Image (cartoon, rainbow, N blue to C red):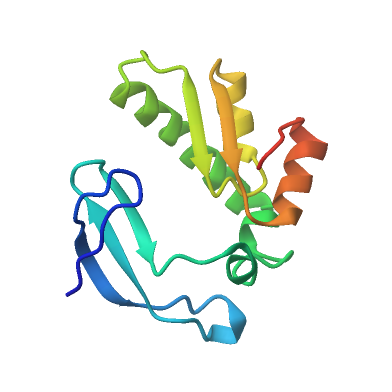
Length: 142
């Protein structure tokens, strides 16, 4: 097990696992990665970090988060978004009115919580997702 420093606060992190692979990208071949957790910040992150070019290979235009859900999958997604919104409200005691989503996909969840009265911001590495969010919801993702 390796220990790395948190890129947010600089404290040592706890390695949750170190033999990660992403079998859904690059024809099932990805680099090994670990997932580390910072107990100080409460943030988990993968290591090693990737630059934008490396990261882009994980998010091609046909990445599942950029493809419209059909019928039953769309219903399940809507139920999940409703559940996630309820959890956010519960965990923040309705005191927080801003949500920042990392990996916002097509912006669907941000659009839903925007309609629920939250201020939103999001990051999405995939250009197809950013374009969809802008065109369909008027949301600018970074």
